[in-house]
Each structure stands twice: as C-alpha cells, then as structure tokens.
Length: 206
Image (cartoon, rainbow, N blue to C red; front, side, top):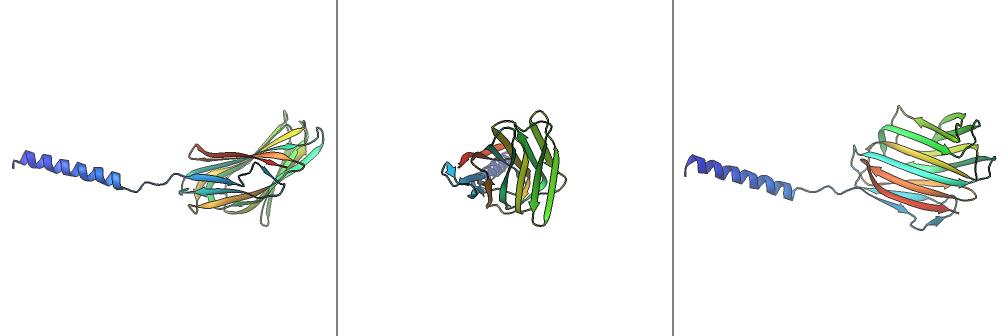
C-alpha cells in the first residue's frame, strides 16, 4: 500500500474514532425545577418548596419571588418571607428587594436575618417605588428571613425578592420558604439558569 493511501486510512480511522467518542460520550442532563405544592391556593404560612435537579457548579442561578399583597391605601404594611432555606452557596451573590405602590416620601424598610446576623436597610420611597441591593459577599447556604415594611399608596403592594450568583454545592437540592401574607396575596416564583427561564409558577395565598 502506498504511503498516501496509508495516510488516508489513518485519517479516516481517526475521524471515525472521534465521531464515536462524541456519540458515546455521556450527555449532561439539563437542569429541572419543580415547585410544590402544585395546587393553585395555599394557606398563609404554608411551605413552598422549589426542587432543583441537575444544577452543576458554576451555573448562574437566579430566583425571583414576586409578591402582590392586598392592603389599605395610606396604611402601614409589613410582609415577608419566613424560613427561606437556601441549599447552596452563590458566589458573587446579589440579593435585591424592590417595592412598588408605596407612598412617596415615606420610609420603607427591609430586614434580612440569618441566624444571629441581621441587616437592615431603610430609606424614603420615590415615585411610589423603593429598592435596595446587597452585594459584595457570597450568599451562603442556610436559613434566612426577609421582612419589608412601609406605607401603601394603593390597595395592592408589589414586592420582588431576587437572589443570584454562581452556584456552588449539591447538584440536587430544594429551596423552601413560607410567605407571610395576610389577609391574602399572590406569590410568583421564577427560576433562571444561565439566562434561561426554567420554571415559573403562581400561587395564591388565602
């Protein structure tokens, strides 16, 4: 066999080997999110569980909990999320809180608690909106609580809690929280991984 034909056979063999290696290589399962309970209505204080599967380390994880709570215009309010169990660390973590339909010029406040550590932010609302952001340190796994207070401008106050960062920790886990809403409200949970919306679900608290 000529050297040229031998080279052709060698290249063809190498190509087939690479093709088989790619075809037989294990494919990583895509991340999935399941939110329970699956019923559309829950009672105040009932747990909501966000089950996360196949979330690899280094993935950019974003979870937003949007809340609409009924109140009386001009009256003070206090709502929150209790027992927020975060099951993994988030490097370069960011926690942001936003409020809408709050009385301009009146102070709003958010208090974040984890164990013995409590952090509070307080300032006046502008144009019926208020927001704050916690940055500069990772969000570590553990149990948190978040409480917001202020003065309502309308009959419905809207709140948004968002945590984001690069996930480090177990591949399969669950995030749990209890919405503290009275008399009733609406909670919407949204989860993104690497910029893709994986799951979004709305629950009525009544």
